[in-house]
Length: 240
Ligand code: DC
Image: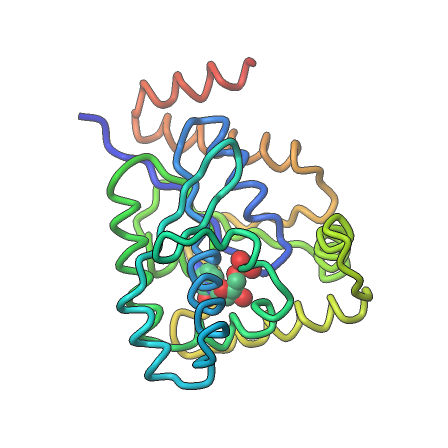
């Protein structure tokens, strides 16, 4: 039986992880695992239930929640207890609170357990803040994706504008910098580059150039691991 391939991508908000991971997943027919969406789903429910500042209630919620991610046609749909919350988890309120919720070790332990299980089920591209270091330390390819703060701010600003949400450049930058500080400075599973991860700054690249680079790296890894059928699959998909 072929070994399941795991590709893990970490990086700060706005570094293009989701776009890269989605593009790879679509190109290779892998599952895409958006771990940030899981932290967002818990944050959304905690906010709605009015318990967001009650740590033990948030931990109970993380232990009880029935969380499902469905990756269909390039979009991850998120369900909590069978209710779809795909749009709601991207709100400014969730953005402002999600880093605090993801600092809680017991919440992380629950989500990491779910993520490892999903990773054992098939070929997967996972992205987040600790997927290269904690969730999948033995991933076949580990990438630390970065981009300048200006580029990351402009990317997020464009996303808000596309949704007709009015927000200033400075507000977006402030939120990104605050989340960077919390995500990289926390005690449990901080965002950091794994020793054996490839560091890649995509500030000057288009998503297509990003994808080309990553597909080359994946091909290298698969060839090295002698995973011939997957290697061929990458070759075939590349000549599309
Ligand atoms: O990638 P994102 O912006 O959707 O992530 C939202 C937040 O979730 C991020 O600010 C930190 C947290 N997160 C985390 O702590 N660990 C992960 N593996 C993924 C996200």
